[in-house]
Image (cartoon, rainbow, N blue to C red; front, side, top):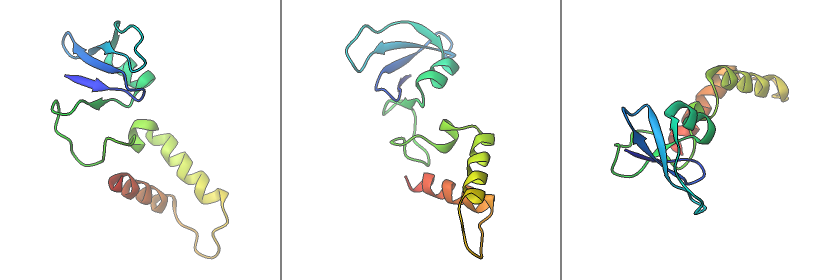
Length: 109
């Protein structure tokens, strides 16, 4: 299975699938090297499957997902900061309202 990272580099499953090998760099520099999949996702992610390798479901792969960029705790903290950091007038939204809007925007992407 092949994946493309945020920089356009191509990675391929290696071994039992828990490791990835860089097979092509977007800038044309030397490829190679094997890393654990989780390390690749943390350092170069989000990873998108190359068309035809995995079925797409739901959100567009053109944009990073909220879950792929931030942990659940940091998403909640960011929504809380938005609620308390701005003047909202009489009706102040809840943190859950902000999170629901973020989910909706992600699905529309």
